[in-house]
Length: 258
Image (tube, rainbow, N blue to C red):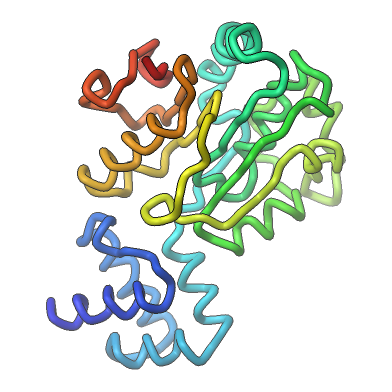
């Protein structure tokens, strides 16, 4: 019943400050209904009670809401472009102490990829990545830094050899890379954004948002960037009104703040 789901969205917002209205309803409702039936619970009201009373169920729910499809150097050609063109340009414009934000960082593959990419141009002690995600659980996984072989497929061989150690069937990222990333829980739809960023990376997350929520986030990113700063988005995304939002399109996935 629509009324039931309306009640549920409000209850979830009261409980988590996650606004389910910002997600595509049909898709999100289907995912939530699947989770509720997996927990053998009947009705949204009973599930809300379970979320209030059971910490594990609550964390499972937040984890389930978050789309954690992640890999290092996803779309390697776009990272190659970053390496050859955008990182040198940003260093030339803003100096070595770049302010970089990895938004919706999931299990850390992206901010760690950024540190490795920057390590070709800067000493590690000059690199700092601010990484945020709504989901505490995925950030805990990021801090552990253990990944399967498949998620490392795009990492250049020299960086894989230098910064990963094989542990059983998995790979552990080195502590010197982990030390360059500061993780913080934050919700793109409601929390304040960092300011004066030189570079923002937010990829393959906004595809799950409504057009209104997407536009709102892209506008806020523009507000977060310095003039001449760059936004790097996912290969499935595009900014329709980029000029009106204050961006100059550098290519399909890189936008510069005018």
